[in-house]
Amino acid sequence: MVQADAHHHPLLPHRRHRHHDRLFLRGEFLLWLYCSSISLIISPYNLYLNPKLVVTHYQFWRLITNFLYFRKMDLDFLFHMFFLARYCKLLEENTFRGRTADFFYMLFFGATVLTGIVLIGGMIPYVSESFAKIIFLSNSLTFMMVYVWSKQNPYIHMSFLGLFTFTAAYLPWVLLGFSVLVGASAWVDLLGMIAGHAYYFLEDVYPQMTGRRPLRTPAFIRSLFAEEPVVMGGRHVQFAAPPPLEGEDHHN
Image (cartoon, rainbow, N blue to C red; front, side, top):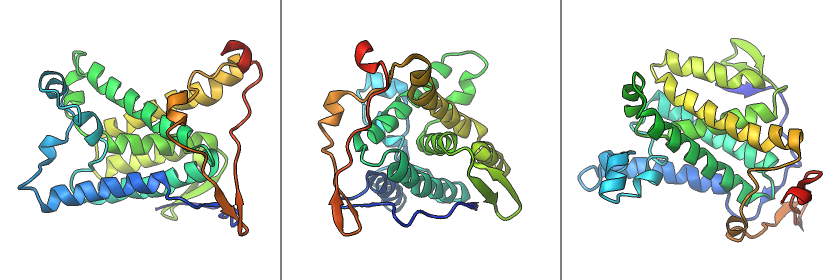
């Protein structure tokens, strides 16, 4: 599909513990497999996002399970699972190396933004019908990670099916076009781009403009993720947290 011309970094450390992106990936695949093979016990209709059922019937699990199911296994499913396996791993091993809590908070922020957009969009005339059709946000969350990676690595040269080359900054738009060609809804990927841009602006752009970091990971989330050692050259290495931005201590 899409390949980067840049060489892989052989010295990148490998985590001693399991990757959280792998757990997320396995969770999605197992849930899809479970729903497909044991449809008499559980149905996707018990997993999709339904605000009315969440509020009136207290089915709060729908706020989570709609991110863990990719519907049927088709080209679009394989497409997004490839994105999840590749770009989620790239983000964790590079941008979020040694920052598991920050990585989790990014996913939590993205899931919250996506859910909020769908809920608000469902109340707006003329577009409410389109948003009502979006009942699973797993593809959108996956696309958000692709967008964040592309914004943080804009100059990497890539190739799409060997047909043409482009820089990573245009990767989301190339993939959006491909999704439309295979019959997928453009809204799904566009929502991921909106959530990804919101995260990129608040995490990377806004702090450089003001010296403030509004998406600082809360302490209670950090307490859930102990700093994880990594293995590099046969030795255990502990990565320290990134230094605060200039002036950050004065505002927080």
